[in-house]
Length: 260
Image (tube, rainbow, N blue to C red):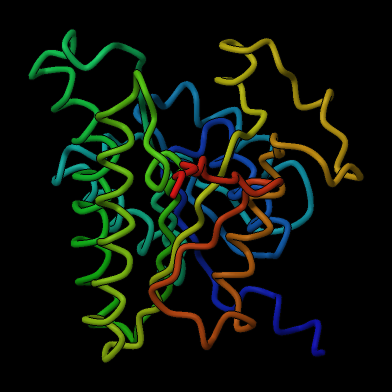
């Protein structure tokens, strides 16, 4: 095994929704790899502390940029500022997401549209904009962060599950279409991860999770960053259109017993 294959090639990575949680873990991991990174979310006050912390340690430089991925013009401005400041974009991670909990009958059109816009349409917008740049500049790598909700469904979170399922099919199909442009497109499908959101909902902190335990259903943001690093590295050169599940113990489907 050549360990260098797991080192990310290139110079610049953009991670959407990287002010906290999984996105922050990925952007910090990439900076540790020596890549210059763009830390972005809808709020500049949230991304600036993350970029500052990255810039205070060895590794790649971090550029904080405010961007709402529902806004096409904002994405184009992000790509322009990134390439002018840091150079060619080699890796793009579609990580930004949002959700809320409610029974289906209580979900308004606006509530449905908001979640689909952020989780699915936002990935479409970003991929279209950066994809045009990559097609004209020798390719690149795109990684979409999905969720096991796309596979299993998620009671009380139907818009989120539906949007992530759409993202998985986007990954699969676009990987076929854009392979001819030397653009690798894959995904990672996390299970429960000890992010700030889980801490507020379930009172579960990252410090409560032991990486040494095999029998667990909750992961750490850094463990998802490891999968993202693999998919962005030459070690994943023969993987295209796949979404890798990272959820700990497999979920065993319920089966029905039929009497003959």
